[in-house]
Image (cartoon, rainbow, N blue to C red):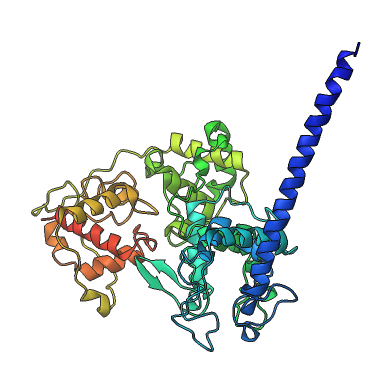
Length: 475
């Protein structure tokens, strides 16, 4: 009689044989697919593209090098591109010195596209591109805005087109980047950004003098383009903030902040003597009401990041994460805004709000080209509603109501400590003398000598919608 163990041996044998056969069949099928992809690449794609050797100047090529195609492209986009479902990357063709506008890239079948994509991923890899070389899991919206600024500051716009405010902008010399976040693999973009000349030598590719953080900002920004639902990291919702300690935050405040803002937050620290503008008077500000993202960005990235004084340092790299969270907890719990001082005698003329009216100002005039601008939007309810949403909540870096008040009368919780006081938009006698163009220019660029910051990230249409809403408050 056979033992149970021996009785199981045939079953074990056949199970192993089945697994081996499956792996063999799968391996053979994969090899067949790669063979098919290789055949297509060699017999069709290589007529224009280079797949081996060393990087060359684009002036020696008909199409871009694809030696690192397996690192470069996201698979879903690559499959769509190979099937002719994506727009051309180069507006005037790959070679700007011999334009080929109207060129149509050959399209493959779905089956052939999959075979080519498999071949790319298996064979067209570049050892210089390191996996997980950059981590964007904690990439913030403010960092993306820095990246957008770098993109223009370092002349990327000169060659690459993007879409801004519903319009295509930039030079049509190299690949467009409208959809770069859905097209490229982030590790390849990072390596390319470190030195584009490593991939396309002597072809006009620009090597920018960027810091490590600058490269992060630029790469992160490019990876958001075309991604409608990009999930930005919100550090004020992290574990460090959930367990913040205001008592420890008071110690952090004493260590780093009192040198300018004073021991009691009255803006009278020893460093304040030589500063213009003077440090913020925290004791008069309702920091408890300040939006989380604005307060975080102000402290982490510095005053200049939110249109405030560049004298306010960016403390993010200096103060440890937990101490930073504790500091914000202290600011919120300790500075809640003092009772506003008695207002000086003012004349109330046709004002719907409670703010000062009129408000004498010596605001710098906008350039003549702006003074003549008229709001191009109609007086529709939808435009006014959109303007209201921006005014009350959506405008960045800080919603207007925080300084100008929920009633737009200049009495917002954060405006109490500002000198001069924020504008009272309900004051009709004052508003009638301010042109649409002047308002547009001030919103876009800020107003020196006041607390009015620049709203450079707002789209033109959004600014005009804001102006529609503001005008509506004094009618």
